[in-house]
Image 1 (cartoon, helix red, strand yellow):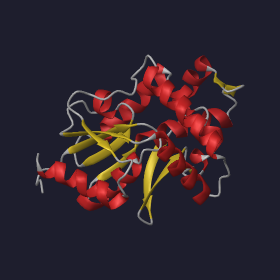
Image 2 (tube, rainbow, N blue to C red; image 1 turned 30 degrees about the vertical axis):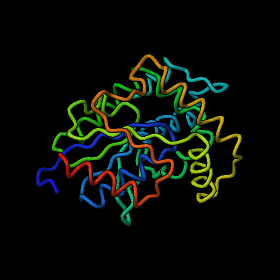
Image 3 (tube, one colour; image 1 turned 180 degrees about the vertical axis):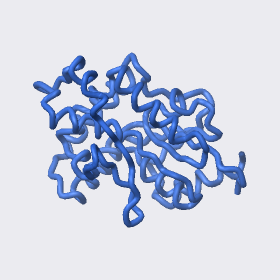
Image 4 (cartoon, helix red, strand yellow; image 1 turned 90 degrees about the vertical axis):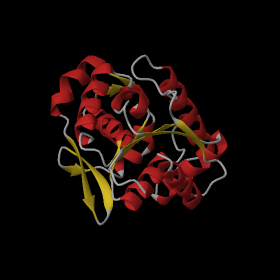
Length: 226
């Protein structure tokens, strides 16, 4: 295993297991895990709570005006990384359907991305960090020592997200979750600002037929090769 603490950038589609993989790696390597997607969800939740989303559309100018009032931080409590929005634990609220339905639209706003990318880069200045999201290898950490692009079959991703929601007591249907994932895939991949892409030097991990332990072992093998 590497002695030097490296930066690991994980990109990929919604519900493909990026965060699960990142958490498992962080625990195994004793690294810091940062869920960048949770940060965008935190901004989206703030927008919903402050009436900055009207009929499913973000009020871009007003959101930009509010950015200085949005404070996000991660705290580790009982071995869990929890997101706090302006001092309040919102780790459960950001996973609700209302947030999922607007987060990709909020994430297209240039000023929102600039704010969060700057914060994310500060978090990773000393290495020993694992971050997952949509633009980690392409924008946040283009010099990361290990870049992974994670993908999985859409039906499998839908079932995984549905199971996650049910475990949190959030009711939804397979069709609703699948439609949301397809819409998010499209928005994430086609937005003008920092779209989801597979960078040239990323290693692709299709975990459609891999369980949690198998994908962790696969990535650890890639780290051994560095």
